[in-house]
Amino acid sequence: MPLSEYFELSFRRRFQQSDTAVHPDESDNNALTFFSGKLPGHNLEPDDVFLLTLALLPHQNPALLDRLFADTFGEGEFPQLGGVRGKQHRGILPTGETALYLLAKDDQAERRRVLQQYLSPGYWLFQEQVLQLEPPLPGEPRLSGKLLMHPEYVELFTTGQISPPPFSTDFPAQRISTRQEWDDLVLHPHTRQQVESLQHWLEHGNRLLRDWGMERKFKPGYRVLFYGPPGTGKTLTATLLGKHAERDVYRVDLSMVVSKYIGETEKNLSKLFDKAEHKDWILFFDEADALFGKRTGVRDAHDRYANQEISYLLQRVEGYNGLVILASNLRENIDDAFLRRFQSLVHFPMPRPGERLRLWQNAIPTAVTLDQGVDLKLIADRYEVSGADIMNIVHYCCLETMARQRQALSLNLLTEGVQRELQKLGKSG
Image (cartoon, one colour):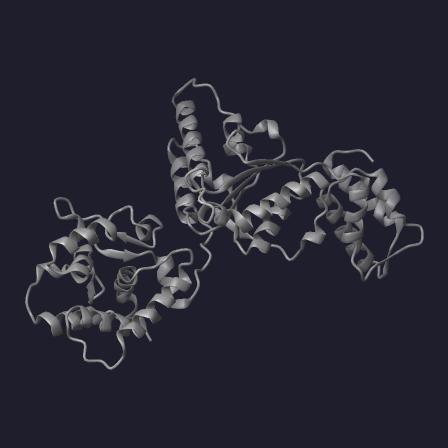
C-alpha cells in the first residue's frame, strides 16, 4: 500500500472519518514494515511512522494535505494546523505545528507528551538527522518552522537507496573499493591478528553496546592507527575491512580539509563528520600526519587556532560511531593526545623474504610463464621491496613482455624492472 494511502487512512481515523473496508492494522503494519526495513536498529512506534510519512508527503503526494484539510476542516484559516507554502512548491509544507496538532489535536496532556517525546531536539529522528525542524523566523514560535526530511532519506524512501555523496569541498572524501580478497593481502602474522580484531569489532561491536548493556561504559565507534612504510597494505586493508563488513569506505582528502584560513579547517571537518554520522561508514585518513600530527606551541594566533582545530577534530573523532582509520608512515609523527584515545595501533612493517615471495607469486598473472632462469625465491630474498613496489614491477614487466610479443617473463626483464623501481625509490640494488 502506498504511504500516501496509509497517511490518508490514518488521518481519517484520527478525525473519525474512516469509512474504508481496509482494516486499520493492515495499513499501519505495512507502513511500519516499510520504514523499519529502511531504518534498522530502531523499534519504530506508530507516531514515528506518522511523522515520517508526514515529512515525506510533499515529495510523494503534494496535494494530499490540502485535500484532507479542506475535507475535514472546510475553507478558512485554521492556525492550529500550521503549514506554510513554499516559494515554488504550491502544496502545503507541514511544520512542527502541523505535526503536533495531527498527533495530539487539542488534548493538552497529549500535546505535552508529543512535545516531550516526538518533537524535542533530542529525539532520535532529529538526532540522527532523518528529520529536522527548520529554525523559525525571529520572534515566531519554535514549531512554526517547516518539518523537513533530510534529502538522503527522501532518496532512500522513494528509490530504495542513497547515492554516494559527490566529492566536493562540502564532502572532501571519496569512496574506495577493491576487487581483491583477503588471500591477496600478505601481512606479518601479528599485523594480521590485529586486523582480525578489527573485523571482530565490525561484526560484534553494536551487539556489545546494545545487547550486553555496555553503552554507558564504552564510547561509540572504534579508532585505530595504521602505521608503516608506503605500499605495505594499509589502504588495501581498509578497503577489505569495508568490503567484507558491507560498509562503505571513504578516503578523506586532507588537502581539501586543511586550510590556511583560520577556522576553515574546523568547518570542513564539521561538514565531513555531519555527513558521515549514523551511516556506518569507515573513514580512512591517509597520510594523516598533516592533520593529526604533533601540536605546536602557541606562538601566535595561527598556532592557537590550529590547536583549537585539532582539539575539535579529536572531539569529533571520539564521538563518531563508526570506524576511523588513520594512516601514517611513522607512529612518531602522530600526536600522543590522539594515540592515547585509540583502541588499537597496527604496525605494517616491510614484508620479510617469505612474505615477499608470496607477494611475487600472487602478482604474476596465471597466463604468464617464467623463463627457466627465473627463481622468485632468490628475487624475494635479495630485494627488499613492498607489495606495492612488486605490483609496479610486475605491471611494467608484463607490458614489456606483451610489447615484445613474448609469453614468458625473462630474468633480465624482471631484473630491469626491479632496478627501475629501486631507482624511483632512491634505493640501490
